[in-house]
Image 1 (cartoon, helix red, strand yellow):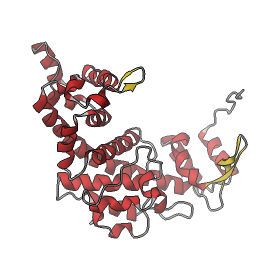
Image 2 (spheres, rainbow, N blue to C red; image 1 turned 90 degrees about the vertical axis):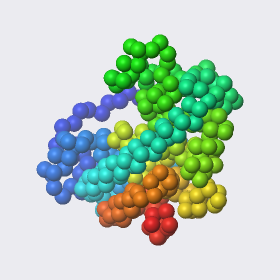
Image 3 (cartoon, rainbow, N blue to C red; image 1 turned 180 degrees about the vertical axis):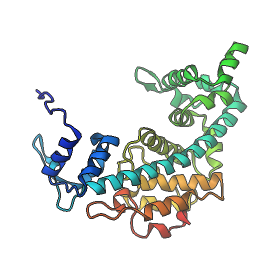
Image 4 (cartoon, rainbow, N blue to C red; image 1 turned 60 degrees about the vertical axis):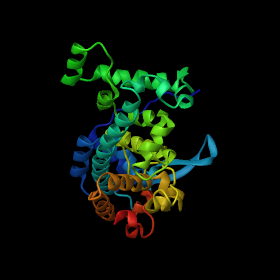
Length: 319
C-alpha cells in the first residue's frame, strides 16, 4: 500500500533553505526568492533536474531515479537560465506551428471539401479502415467527431453564432477547420482518404505517412508549448518518421542518431522543412539556429541533451 503524502507547505524562504541544504548553490538569495515567487518551485524543478544526483530505485533495482541531493557545481541561477532559454524556444515553436497549422487547415478544407462540404462528418468520405477502427469503446472517427463538435460548440466567434442563426446545417469543412486545434487537425489528416493524404503530402514533397507523423510530432510539441512545460530536453513521444532521401533529403539525418528524434531537435528539423515549403523566404530556421547556438553555458547541462549533436548548424536544413 502506498504511503500518504506528508510533505508540509513551505514559505519561499524555506524553499530556498531546502534547496541549499540539498547542495544547490544559491549565489543571490533575494533573487532566488523572487524567482520562486514569480515562477514557482514546481515549474522550476524540471530545469534543475539535470543537476540532481541519481540513485537506485528501491522498488526497481534495475532503474535509477532522481535523488534529492544535487551534483557538485549545481547552481540555482543555471536552472533559471534554462527556464528562460526554454521560454524563448517555446515561443519560436509556437510561431512555426501557427503557420504550419494555418496551412494544414487550408489543405484539409480544400481536399475534403472537393468530396463533400461535410466530408468530415462521415467515414464514407474518409479512409474507412482508419475511421472505423475501434477506439476507446467507439470508433476513431466517432471519438474524433465528438471532440471536433465540442470545439465548434465552445467557439465564441461571431461568425459561428451567425451561421447557426442563419442555417440549419452543420458547419461545412472549410468553416469547421477554423474552430479546431492542431491536435484535432492532425487526427483528421490521419483519417483522411488515402488520395487526399497523398495530395496534401505531395504539396510538401512528402509521402503521406511521413507527413502524418511529422504533424503528430508537432501537435505533441504544441501541447508542451501551450502548457508552458519544459521542451528543451523533454522526450518526444510522437517522434517524426525518418523521410526517404527522395522526399526530404535535408531531414534524412535525423535517423542517424536516436536522440535527434527523441528530443526536440527532430521536431525543429521537420518544422524548418515544412516552413520552407510553405514560405521559401522564411527566417525561422535561422532564428532557431541562433537561439540554440546561444544555449546558456553551464557545467551540468548542454545543447546535446536536446538532440543538437556535432556540427548540426552546418547542415543544409539550417542554411
